[in-house]
Length: 317
Image (cartoon, rainbow, N blue to C red; front, side, top):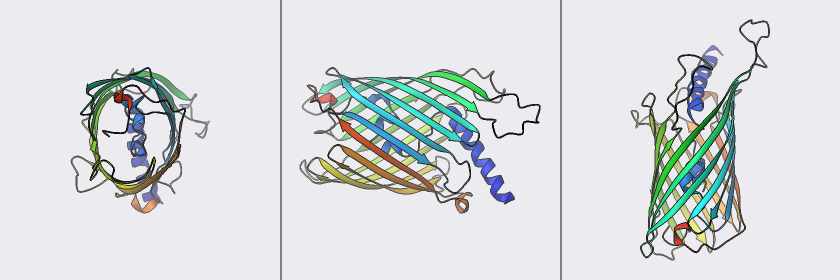
């Protein structure tokens, strides 16, 4: 029991630190939810795309991290898009609630070659709170919930060429006021990430598609960085499709010692979308939980054909 509690304390401290910096990134972006990680995807598509996502981390451990989000985006005019995201993140005695408003503008570099460039900007708001409702009320140091409201911005650029895509992003551009807690709390929240991949097809009308991708993230404050290596296999049935894949995440100074690895699968039938992802942590906490489970549910509504190829996610994709 002492070992279990010690491991939990260490990992909760790690997750607390990550939670303080940014909304945790698992593999939700792989569930046709790229807009969750980058504003540059706002408005790409013929529908209002809505995705609800739920993550339960380290299932089997009490008060383990859990995250829920709801996101939607829509085309605005011929070459722009807007979107909104709401999220709730819980980790032990910490809570984080917030939202994100995003805008993207899409440019056509070469319509014949399906060559596009997009720029995105997000305004972020969150409330970070330490819940003391279960603490010992006799402790004189406990005098009310600790909370702070944060405002910040993200920017990004997305390049698409035929079936290749590359998204470069910078999150939490503004430094944080650290007077609310302690002097050891990080004030530099900036982190940078790259998401890139390619959709391989034998020919344009092929039913099968293979999509390898990579997600790289680095935090400015302490230089921590990690990489996701992903691969998805997709089968099309007219406008419907089914897919399955696997993701491998590691710290960049420990390439052969993965943080987690796991399968995932999804389906889109008509306007409805569903996906499931499972990850197992390959570290000291492995024996104390049944892994991380993620479910994505979505719907595409109010179809509107775009007049510019730069807002389509078909054809050259």
